[in-house]
Amino acid sequence: MLMLLLRFIGFALIIMFTAWIVPGISVENFKWAFVVAIVISLINLFIKPILILITLPINILTLGLFTLVINALLLIFAAYLVPGFEVDGFLNALLGSVIISLLTVGLNLP
Image 1 (tube, helix red, strand yellow):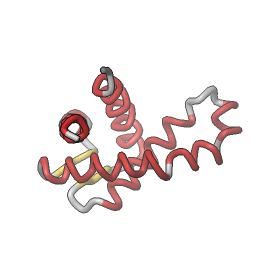
Image 2: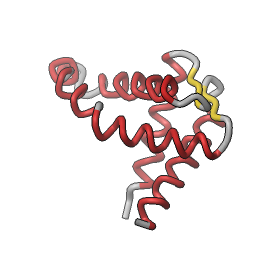
Image 3: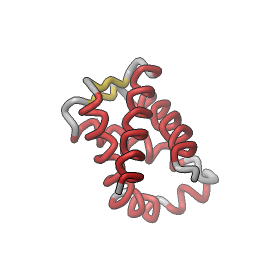
């Protein structure tokens, strides 16, 4: 349970860092970053697998690069759900989702 809480805290810090780096992404404070971390985790758990399955032919044609588009759209959806988190535009969401994905890989290492 403690490891899960630490991962969410790390993920919230990654979201705050991404908001600091990317000018079109903003988060009000750590509390909202923590909420965004939980919302993105739930979106990745329930919605993302369905979208990956639906867009499988496009993913195959683009050699998996369309997954970046899906991640950006899901980040915009998370911004729509959480009032303290804003993403201005698709390109900012794309850049933010790439940064979040790269940093999350390091967070998930044992």
